[in-house]
Image (cartoon, rainbow, N blue to C red; front, side):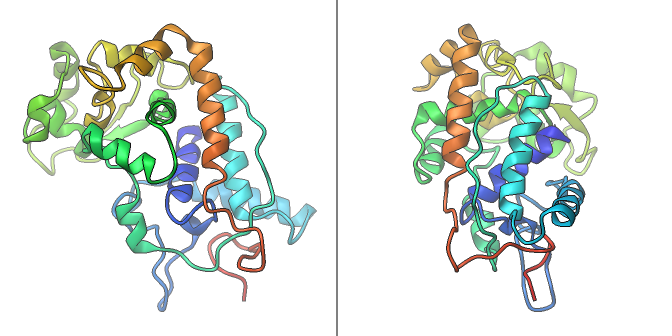
Length: 272
């Protein structure tokens, strides 16, 4: 569940800030972010956050926000999988609303080319180097067939310029057939070399043209970000340090600290 909790924190922070809005359930009069395209049937781990919140509330009611729990859970997940630690700034308040539309537009897509990726991260205040460092989160976790099918079968216009190792692509084709709708939810690791360990293998994979997603491989192969990828492949400690620093920065996006927010008793719904 570690990669899923890290991803949930990212999806929270990139949409209206780190405010726990991604955790809110839909109601008859309210549409949250869970059913937005990038999240629907994709984000998972909500039950883990519920369990943490329940225990925290029993010990320290009304003090620790859901947004803070997400931030700490992301850090602890990375540490548990062998990655770096960092000091999580605390004191976030939870939002009393969510933004379905922004969840559909503000999150980087696995189909994006490099200029769109750079723009997406720049809009949130990140440099291209910080974008590459944060992309290293794909050293853990899995992706569904539907988001890498075109890349391995070279089925669309964008993938025609993809650099992909032929044997790597062939190894994925049996589990992800070319026909849309076939094995759409079949999973493959984002980093086949060490899928459950947080290391720098993601970058060595890119140099070997073995990035699973189109957006991954866009970071290397005659790209303006090639030097950062090579650096992180050669210097794992530099990657881990830069990733940790970028996570601290991401955790400060759009934070609510005043009376505009609340500390939810239940992460799935606003108080009252």
